[in-house]
View (tube, rainbow, N blue to C red):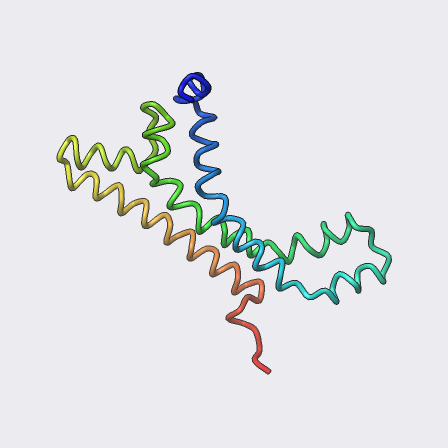
Length: 148
């Protein structure tokens, strides 16, 4: 087996393929959930109004599934940025933020610097969550729906 993948290990493709394999389910699940909640009457109405299959996908399904895509991005971004295993074993010395934090804290013993990087990454993530919630509120998200 080592001979089959010898040229693959240590490349950018290996790291990307490993991360896709690891994090794709976290992206698919929110999109699938949102697609399941789309009212079939909307698709039927678009068909009744003469929309083609492509127009239905472009004008109805994709806009309604956008919240699932954003949710998936939020669920994948931080774990993908801080993963240690994939770049360590498939990347052959490649660094992601998680590897940088690990090296700074464990090998160099600079706990303050490593913690500062981790906190900055957390602040970036909180900022992204804030922007997504703000855009949901402006577009009439769950917070603005009227209960019947």
